[in-house]
Image (cartoon, rainbow, N blue to C red; front, side, top):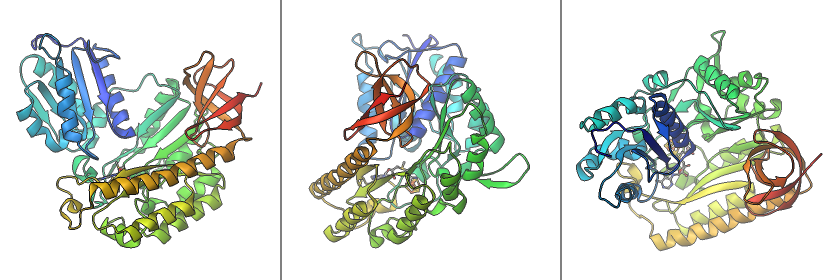
Length: 440
Ligand code: SAM
Ligand code: SF4
């Protein structure tokens, strides 16, 4: 496509967390509202948006290689826009190094994408990395259609400044979206087909707002209001910080049927010295106490977490403490990462950076322990009868895929449709999914 022609088709590719997936959906809605058509294949698209992630590893190099791969056989490129956290952190450098990139737009400024694309098509490259998030949400089009399981960002940014993490710099300060806007967006998602909504935030449980009567409420209050939506069957939230697990939110797990029995509560490490160096502001003991209270409120809760191995200075004994914590909690699932120095964060310049081979070896041991516990959790589910939300067709003929209340993938056959909530007996377990039998 010559750069002067306005793009007619677009492809948005999102990397990283669920908040990026949400942002990618909103960007697609913005572009569609301008009359552009989404394509599944980036090869034929006039405009490609790379919605990037900066949280770990060689994020920036990955963006450059993706940009390179967009070059067509005849040497031309689509109009390329780089969005997301790499755009925020390294926008100017991207513009300087990659002439084929015409638009750089940060996570709090993507409501400006359509006008920037129009400028770019007219030959004017642009960078926009402003931070105030309220302007963005107010400028987005209203939600229309939704799959059975929808994301809804309620909170953005982070004030916690864990010493390894780039999020406070790329996403900015913590802000909570207003209650009325969230209720409206949730209703639109439900009207558009959503049966389940996952409330999203970098620290989703730090959300605060005022309800319709002007009373101060937290995330549990918002969940209670959304639970009153008749056609909304399930509510989830992620990601939470241990320090923001309020009494009300813990109690909500025992009181609100639509709040699914699943909690993703990252701990990062199982040793108090390491947690302090990470600036996590919780201890191993305070974390375990929260889990005890959540389990008391909702005994069948499935627990998930995030772990980092090889934080600067982590000794073998301190890593062993992480394995001990894993052994004590028995997570239903968890994410684990090698520590990755992020430019500009305090940990990146700490002494005693751990050798990559040591990190590899620790990650292997941790992942073996987490896989053992995930398999055990799934095996213990065999024999349970539960509701499954049908999300899509499986790979085999007649097969369907959906999610149990505990966020397990369940496959089964039968006469159902996407968006149905069906009763299924869990009959067989693997490490990543379960086989179910539809109850007639
Ligand atoms: N706000 C959430 C919390 O505090 O747990 C997590 C948000 S962060 C986007 C997701 C996960 O990425 C973190 O929980 C952490 O395990 C991981 N992470 C963040 N920075 C990292 C780094 N520099 N190296 C490795 N993993 C990192
Ligand atoms: Fe990053 Fe820590 Fe904030 Fe989570 S709480 S987003 S890990 S700084």
